[in-house]
Length: 94
Length: 305
Image 1 (spheres, helix red, strand yellow):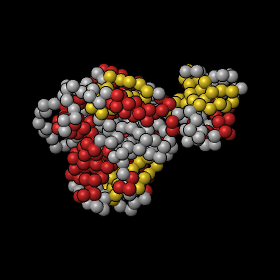
Image 2: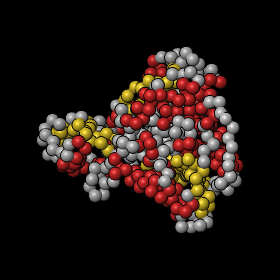
Image 3: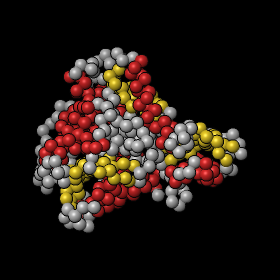
Image 4: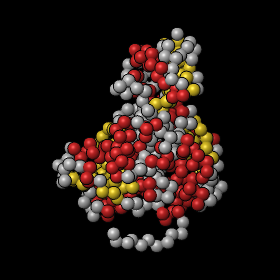
């Protein structure tokens, strides 16, 4: 079950610069576990110590914010596109 | 309380700066350390960014780089854009801003109401994508734009050298020993730091950085993983202190609950960093900066936690 994951600039160092990667999982949390196996360090960037999705990271499944779906339990299917988007635009900024 | 009388002002430019210094020393156990924060949301555009925006606009006019045939252009994730737009329109300039699409809705709405032209860039590329677009726009039509480029413009640093630094020196009667602030463009630390080091070379300068490349501290930049501002000179700093987004959120809520101070996330990061610094000192006078208020963060989820 391959899902396409779009990676934000701040995490490109973990994927060796790849902006899109493939991973597997029947839910968003499964997908994050699989990303962690493929790209170690990914999970702690996306989840806090209790395993909850971090407040400042937004996850979109085919352009729908998972906060309005089922959060980390949102189910995924083959061909879905998951975008990991920082909640703030910051970085270099003001 | 003694009554302070301020004379009437002619325009918004005169309202920039001269912000209050808030005493937060009671957050520290050690009574030999004092802690103060500059309340920068008192600026007319609501953030510290009014200072560099004013200096950048006035310097560009003086140098002949900005006139009424040109639009002010820059990349920003919010506060600087608000400052350019308000201060720019007060002198008859139109403003074009490149913003990552994930800028908070409050900011986009403010910028539209204030009259900026907004060009949204890919949210996955963060501010760096907006910077690249601003550069391309400028290169494609250099006659149309004055590219303000806050990350490279020496007027950004100069603004803090001329205003924020002297204010802090006066407000602490020259007793400041440590200046600690978040690193975004680095203009605040570079400018205030230069002024303070000239007054007293023993004063220490400390930069605050998010602890990870992917973070939620608006306005701060993870220098290791993003485009580095050319005004930033790391060797000018004595120390870097790292703060997590969760620590910043926690301090934002503490300031509201305990002090009735309604500040933004980078102010929470400033307090978290200053408290970490205080733990390493036996005495001193620490000054930090609270860049903006909480109003532009109302849509964030952490308030309800």
